[in-house]
Length: 116
Length: 113
Image (cartoon, rainbow over all chains, first blue to last red; front, side, top):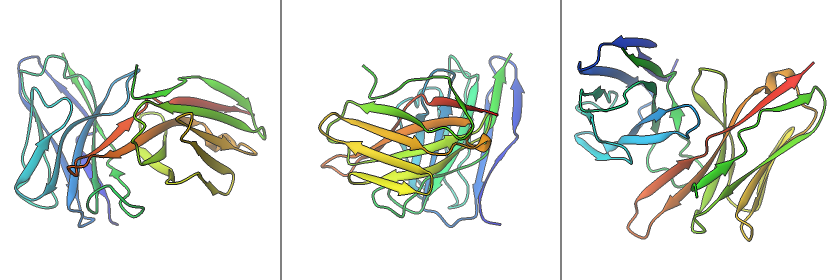
């Protein structure tokens, strides 16, 4: 089955530790995205990548880093510099640019990160 | 003012009823809009896209009012399975080709048996 996988589903880390969240897609999509979702707030874009070996900062990139070495993979590292890392992290992908009726954004099941 | 605003609810509606909720947006240059459905602790899934005045898919109707800058979602003959949070999303592309999706905080709907 084609889709997006994120692992793990729940992640607990101590304050001050870096942590990497995995996102893999087998949809052959060019574009991939990372969002975080907090209670009472809409999804906010952290980073996105429209092509391998290229990525752009979103609205809240501070304290995060990404890489896009393979088309199917877009891991997100939450560094110790991120002040409020506890959140629900969602990875998404789309065929290409979002413009147009066919470029639906598909979401993975998410990783719930709790920093203790 | 938030770029995309939604009434958070919760809306508690009896099964079989019709329910509607609105979403307002502040960027008048937004080109298209989406409604996503998100079940509790799950990922959002696309429900409908709105590119012109509106869209209809079975029991669901989305309408766009550009003059007043709002999008509405109407659900007829509501089912228990419609219970979810509905996210409104505005899409904008700049003259430089920079795309942006802005998500609302969501409206929580509970259908009561």
